[in-house]
Length: 298
Figure (tube, helix red, strand yellow):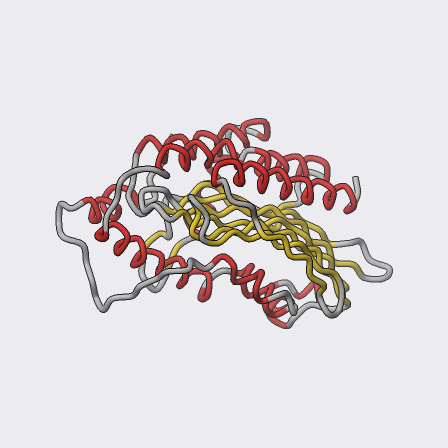
């Protein structure tokens, strides 16, 4: 196995996902190739004001350099003084319809090298769902696909990565989950490269099975100003997480990544209100009481 095989897989994954989402939306993604000063670059594919998606991005990046920022080496001192190579596909899709959930997926590979030392490498990734109006059947379907994708790697794999996802995508300053989770893993290098790569592929390859049926089911649901207003309010939580807590956003900015590509995950229309709470018993309040609770869906 080699990094070139990982790169080939990731670029093909980006192409496959973009092609499928274009079929669902009916509008073409804008493709933007970019170079990173210091080493590497990527391909950003972005859709805005689509028929289904208000904004969506499916990005590939492959960056490398002679050293990592202090924030990375502070957490992992063994990386100090090493050159690095990082590549991945990261996507966020924000549908216009408030009944269709936002989704995030990422699969990535990292390697750090130093002369006369073994390379340090790992895989990471996951996918998670952020609904604005909850549907139990959607949550169950999404988590079933996540569970089935990990089943070849042991029955304990999905519960572990599901818990990891719930803990990671959590807004500590709000004391609430970002959404209903899915799966998440990082620093994954056991038992060997081939197995870790295969698990990462299983996550990426199952994304469309997890999300496309939900998007197609909800994209034409009638809605009004109230639903759009609540969607914009809840999108504010998405922005808060990505800018305050997300390690990938921080790593991308600190390593000189392309800002436009890193921040394409932010929704185009967002609102904040002072100390607002939904009316008790409303559909909006059900999101909090029935879905944002770290539930075991399967």
